[in-house]
Each structure stands twice: as structure tokens, then as C-alpha cells.
Amino acid sequence: MKLPLRWPGPQGPQPRRVLLVQLSAMGDQVQTLPAVSDILARWPGLELHWAVDQRFADIARMHAGVHRVHALPLKAVQQRRRGALRELLRELRELRRTRFDLAWDPQSVLKSALVARVARLAPGGLRVGYRAADCGGEPLAARLFDLHFQRPAGAHGTLGRRLFAQAVFDTDSTRPIRYGIRDAMAVARPGNYAVLAHGASKPEKLWPQAHWLELGAALIEAGLELVLPWGNETEQRRAQQCLAAWPAGHARLAARGGLPDMARLIAGARLVVGVDSGFSHLAAALGRPLVMLFTSTGPELFSPECPERSITLGGDGDIPTPAQAAQAVSQVLAAAGEPDPAGQTS
Image 1 (cartoon, rainbow, N blue to C red):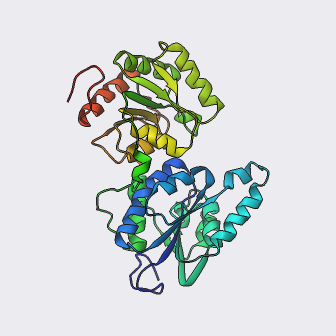
Image 2: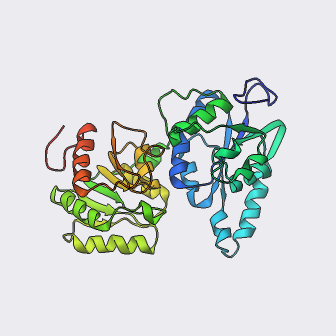
Image 3: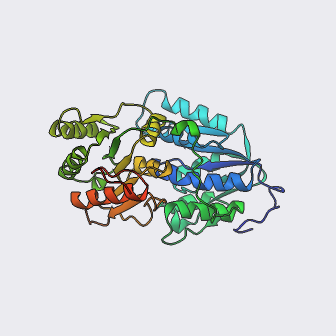
């Protein structure tokens, strides 16, 4: 047997119960949502479970079609938090209560492949992941799969997952992108504010703080309130330094909340400016006007999949200037039909 799978097949006339294994990170979770929508559009009666690192479980829960989310405290176990290992074992036991026709692993690193391996399969069930060369530098992961998919060279992260889903589930990767986020997650009070998603998982992805200060001052002068999210003490300290440099009353820290709270905040924003981070990808999924700033990483695989509402700048060591970012802000707001911060309209 090989990919693409043909239905009906050994698993039955159609897939009935599927385990998706995409453990991390936040941006990758968001980029997986359209593939989930493709699968459920092709097989509307399918029961789809999602195994995910507990930190990002709310992204999986946002998709209205996901039947159950298995939130695994993997990071907590790595950090040796008290009770985390017991909780992980309990979640894995719950996972094994269900038999799956397919365990589909579009992450395909060793830890995700191990989760796919722990899952119980129905007779004829398969575990499907990437080939060894595409397993994120962990080729041993491929040995845990029954079937292997070759990652399309140069394909955008979202498209790559959709093509993988097409090979496994006979989906249509050309249909319009649907993130499937629950309507309730997008309920927000529209406001005259911009979210500046300045934090990133790696220091090399950060945009210089002096650049944020200059762009923020321009946005404040144009009449926008600024909201700065933060996820740790370092990001909080950097955001507070920015707030101290801008005129009082024109910028604030985002309230510390969960991902659903951030989704509502982003959904109500007139604009999001962010680095290569999960919040930027979430803004793209919610259809908000977005300027995404790349520094060390390239934009080819991770740029937003909504060109009519987003502009990507920089990448591969080319750091965008504040002037370039400000010009992109005007362009993206005009393209989205939003009033220009300077008072002009499209």
C-alpha cells in the first residue's frame, strides 16, 4: 500500500475515526486548521480527534469540527512540574480508549510519532507521517509510520499540510481556505486599536525594539491605540519599556489571558503588526489586516495565506525598517477597506 490512499480501502468504505497529531507550535497549529476543514468537508461524518501539547490546546478547540482534543502536558513534563507526568499518563490512557482508522502526523518529529504509536488502531488502521528526510532532523520518527509522505519542496506550511491531507483523505486542496474557527472565538467589540505582536519563540525572530518605538509613535500620531500582548516576563518588560516611551494613555498591555481571549482581542483590532509568531498567524486566520515582519527566518513557508489582507516584509537577514512597516500599514488597511490611520480611506 502507498500514498495516495484509495477509498474504499482496508480501513473500510470511508475513514470513520481519525487521530491528528500536531503537538506544537502555535503557528503550526493555525496552519493545520485549513487541512482539518478540508478533511471534514470531504468526510462530514468523520470523528476527528486532535493530540496536542497542552499549551496550544485552545487552538485545536477553536475548530468547530474537532470532536475531541487530547491535551498532553508535554512541556510541563519536560520542565518536571509536579504532577505533570501523572497527568500525561492519564491523558494517554484516555487516548488509548479509542480505536482509530488512521493516525495522521503532519508534524512527524520523534515525540509526535511516539504519540501516534501509542494510539490504538482499528483493524487495517494505519499510521501516516513524513519520510525520514522530512522529519525535522529526527529521521528515526519515520520508522514509527506505516506510510510515508514526501514533503513538497518549497511548499507553504499551510499548503503542504493540505497536500498531505489530500494524499491521505482524498480531499480537495484547491478549495478556498477555511480555518474553521468557532464564531464565538471571533466575537469581539471592534475597536480603533492595533495589536503589536512583538514577542517570538526565538530571539533571532524579534524586530529591534527601537523600530517598534518608532512605528508605534507613528501609529499613535495617526490616532490608533496600541495594545501589546506578552507571554513571559521578558516580553512584559520589553512591552513596558515601550509604553514608558510613548505618550501616556495611548498604549496598554494586553490582559493576561488564554488563547481564546487573544483571539477575541485580535478579532476586534483594526490592524495587527507582528513578527513570525503564532499571534501573527492567528491574525491571518481571523482575517485581520496584518503586516508580518520577518528578520532571520524566510517568509516562503510561513507568510500569511491571505494576500488581500496582509503584507510580508523582510526575511533571511533583511530586517524591515520602521518606514517600510508604516508604508505597509497604509497599504494593507487600504486593501482591506479599512480607513487609513492618517485619515484617508480606500
